Image (tube, rainbow, N blue to C red; front, side):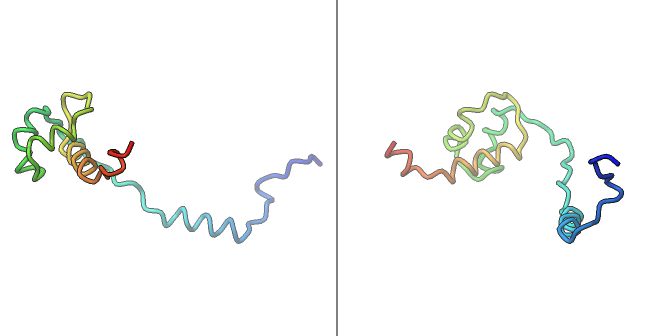
Length: 93
């Protein structure tokens, strides 16, 4: 008989069951439908209505964005991250 044990003959341990249960209970990532992309200048024109920020804040949030078109979700994420930055740490550096 070889040293390799067949996986069919392997005894199932309690840890195996716990791991399998955790995998089953994990919710799958929600599938996002294709969201339309908008030109950044269009989003900037409507940033007060869409994101509740002034154009200057929108410009700061998307300063390093290389894309000419982005989704509203991506723009919202960038604006939120920009507003949440801790500027006191950056000023000390």
